[in-house]
Each structure stands twice: as structure tokens, then as C-alpha cells.
Amino acid sequence: MENEQLIPERTYRRRRARLHDSAPPRGPWPAPKVERFEPIAAKYANEWPAWGHRKIAAMMRADGYEVSTSTVERALRRRGLLLPRGYRADRKSWAVLRRKVFRDPPTRRNRVWQTDFSEFETTGGGIWRICAVIDYATKYCLAVTVTPTGRGADALACLMLAVAEAERVLGLDDLRADRGQVEVFGPAGEVLGMAPAPIAVVSDNGPCFRGEVFKTAFDGPDPLLRHVRTRVRSPQTNGVIERFFGTLKYEHRSGT
Figure 1 (spheres, rainbow, N blue to C red):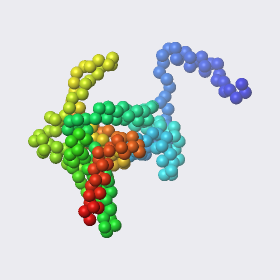
Figure 2 (cartoon, rainbow, N blue to C red; figure 1 turned 180 degrees about the vertical axis):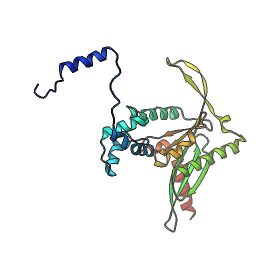
Figure 3 (cartoon, rainbow, N blue to C red; figure 1 turned 90 degrees about the vertical axis):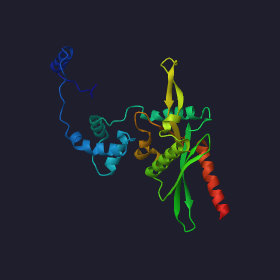
């Protein structure tokens, strides 16, 4: 009881009367510190969109800014950049999507593609990165690129070459004409109809596949492709592309 801070009775009754009269609350109060750090916190949030306000606050403090976690939270809320509660639940969404892709292995072309990077060391000691895209059902290699780096731009370029090659082989102007159909379910589990299914592009969780550049391949109102990432440390989920790289390196070493 000694630590309780009591307010005067007149103040209590005045606030209670205002509440019952539906009077607007006081404020907004000036927040000079939030206003000062708001553009800085927004810059960090745009550079690291998967980070929550706690990590952003810790990084800002590591860079020399004297800012509290609550200040960063309020600053990001003002800009609409605060991640929603339960954001980490997106892992469950990825798991559900993976099960849908691999529950019944596809038997037709252009239903599931697999992509990945592999390193190749030259006789001179240099390292090249090989990126490939393979159709899961036909085992047809749609594209292979060799680059000195393994960035998102390199992965995106290889994927676009795969789309162009698939259209060339099938004689199509738009690969959407060869997509499959999926059932659309209502809230009670009833089937509402059929809808076009984007081609599932399966990759691992490398930084090149998690960046903003690679995500542009799946944007738009009617995307041709959708991205599915495998579980962490589960290369067998992407086994077709892994086997392709193994065979490629084995044949190259055997030939030399």
C-alpha cells in the first residue's frame, strides 16, 4: 500500500465524468524523441522487412543511436511498418504449402520446378556459381547459368531464362496457357470451383532466394510462378536439382 500512487478524488471524478460523457481523450501529446527517430527506424525497417521492432532497436543501438525499444515500436507504428503479432507463424504457412506441393508428386510438366545454386572450382583456384532450373516431372533442365556471384539477380535471371525456354519448347507466347487447375474451397470446406495454379518454384532458404529481387518473379495480379521454400537443412526436398548438380560434377571430373 505504501508504494501505491493515489490521485486526488476530484481528478478521479472529473476523468470518470469525461469517460461517461464520451468526451474525446486528451492529446495527442508531443513526442519529440519518436519524431526524431521515426525516419531512421523506417529506413532500417525498409532495408530489413523481416525484422521486428526489437531487432531494429537493437541494431540502431549498436550503430550508436540512444533509443529505446518502445520508441522504435511507436515510430514504426506511425509509418505502418510494425509487423503484426504472430508474424513468425508464417513458418506454418510455408509448411502447409510444402505439403500441398509434395503430397502427390506431380506427373505433368510445369507444375513444380526446382532451382538452386552450386559451386564449381576451376583448375586455377577460382569459384563459379552454377544456377539451374529443372522441371520436376519431366526432369528437363530448362536453364543453366554460370556466374561469378550467387545473388538474387543471378537467380532471377536464370528463372526468367527457364520461362523463356519452356515457352519456346511448347510454342507458347504465354506459359500461363499450360498451367494446371486447383480446387477453390469455401469456409466450410466446400468446393467453390477451379482456379489456375501458378507453377511452384521450389528452392532452399539461401539469402538469394529470400531477398526482394527474387520476389519480383512472383508479383502481379495473375502471377505465373509461386515460390515454395524447403525446410531448413532438408536438401532431399529439392532432390532433383541436387542430383542434377551431382551428376554434372561427376561427369565433368570423369571427362577430365
